[in-house]
Amino acid sequence: MPERPVPAAADETGTLAAPTTPWGILQRLGPGLIIAASIVGSGELILTTKTGAEAGYSLLWLILIGCVVKVFVQVEIGRFTIVEGRSTMEAMNMVQPKLGVSWMVWFWLAMFLTSLAQLGGICGGVGQSLAMTFPLRGDFIDHLQTGAAMPVINGFSDISIAKLQQVLTCDDVVWSIIVAVATSVMLVLGRYNLIQTVSTILVAGFTLVTMFDVAALPFFSDIELSWADIRHGLSFHLPEKVGKDDPLVTALATFGIIGVGANELIAYPYWCLEKGYASFVGVRNAGADWAERARGWLRVMRWDSWCSMVIYTFATIAFYMLGAAVLNKRGLDMTGFKLVYNLAAMYTDVFGRAGQYVFLIGAFAVLYSTFFVALAGHSRVVADALRAFHLGARTEADRQWWVKLLSGAFPIICLLCYIFWRDPGRLVAWSGFMQTLMLPMLGGMAIWNRYKHCDPRVAPGRLWDVMLWISMGAMVVVGVWAVYANLLAPHAQLLAD
Image 1 (spheres, helix red, strand yellow):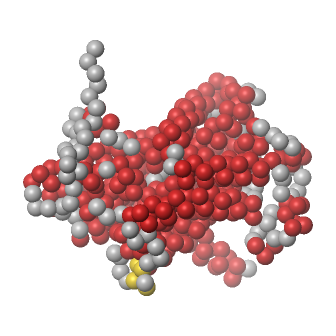
Image 2 (image 1 turned 30 degrees about the vertical axis):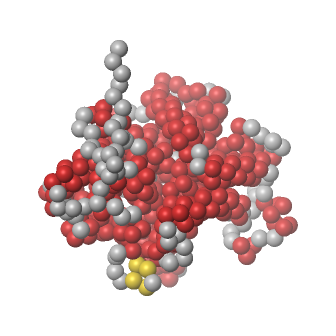
Image 3 (image 1 turned 90 degrees about the vertical axis):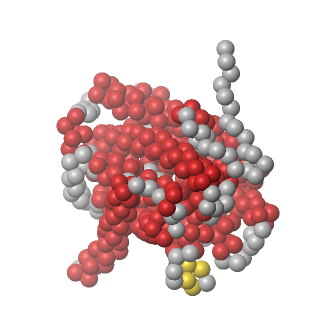
């Protein structure tokens, strides 16, 4: 039996011709799969299901668009990195005007801080899922079952030892501490490949279980899921506000975080660099060989982006449909401590009592993969940002040192975010809002680079340009609406009252 061909090695200059066969291209995929493992996490498991719970099927069209439309900007940002050999942070720091660094870098810094809060919510979600699966003292489960009122810390000004003793349940915090410390150790030691492989397998398995759960609901429960519901969800309807929750506001935050969110758009080129796409192309020159290599590796990068899009789109739709079919019709509480607990209800109709454990194991898989991969990406981006701020990482050795330091520190910071604000859904929603605001900026940067810096020999065609502008337009519309819905409308209502 003939052996499978292995990917060719780079020559002495570091450059390498891109594969041309489908099998050869598949062997060179990777950055998109890393992003997919990060994407199928907080946005899909928490915000997407929360949107379905609040809006029913009405916003299925927005979820689908949110997964597909941002890929064009992702590819364009990746094109700049592969052709120019420059990172996303370098590209953002080229945007004028500057106050020390580009205004866009300053906004990224604000978004990054909310992202740490988001990952704090994810760390807490992982801790909660473990506390329900493997209780230590059992206090977290007791609190969920009794439904006792428990105050939530709403800022550092409210913190005191006495209040912490009143607020904190033990099990979820202990498990969150274990998760954060273990993540710090693994990221510092650089054991990425093993964890990423295991996380990808777990995420893939849980996604398949979720898709099966959606398909099996009509046969194992009294919940009906019909093609009429799906058609309604794809008919561009807007849901009505029910009570204090506005499902459209939740959906806009979801749009910023599902699919390729702003953080993933920023991190993706770094994984392309580590995969070797840019080094295989080599430094840009006027030679025909360079142009051929560039076109080849850009084709590989497009395959990488679109294959990952198919994976996370199916997962996102499955989570949304469960939220609409189960959580919306049962009116379950999707805030605070009961968030992860009630998400398990999506699986009990099909899998019975075992469904809770199916969900909790899967929740650990998808949330932890996001926590791990996102922090790995953040450590690389922030180390690069320090160079932009002239604070460190002047050499590659310095940058690697900062990556390890930040990799160890970020999980602990995220843990503190969860301890001081015990609402994973709210923490994730904050980050979704900031990422929604960042999206049009990244879209504008991608278009600027397309027309200002793109080498004509590797420029995309007219149809691609049209889709890129549509992608940018969708990001602008959602960003503007997010500002109105979250900032201007509540202020106007307050003045009216």
